[in-house]
Length: 150
Image (cartoon, rainbow, N blue to C red; front, side, top):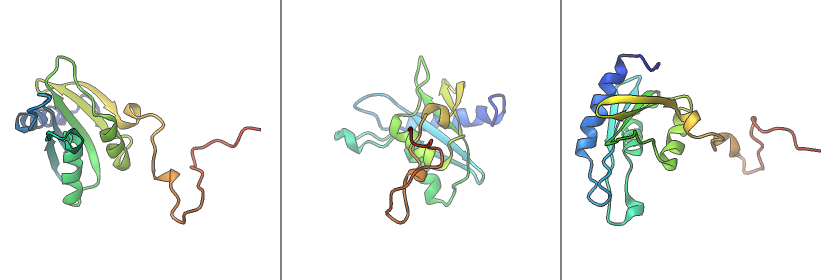
């Protein structure tokens, strides 16, 4: 989805509404996400916990909601933060998004306005993907890897 696509405005507003629903009493960093799929929009917000490792990011929440509904064809993601500068997904969320769509455009939103559009691939260079894993337990060389140096 290109940066000038009118669907970004709707996604940005949806992400802002989710940001207002977040539970962030500790950091006060409220985040909302709206994930456009070929079958609908999946939404999420961050949910903090006093035990920080148990926090759930808005982006991961939206992806989990989509997957639970059987929606796996992602088109675009809007991530809303308070600003003044737009916040990007954390490293863990970048990895989660990469599992489904490396070329997914991510709109970074402040005040219901998309300030920047960037792909997951750009956010997470040298992504660890399933190509690195072997289904038979044997050592596996990813297709993207170069020949060993001699």
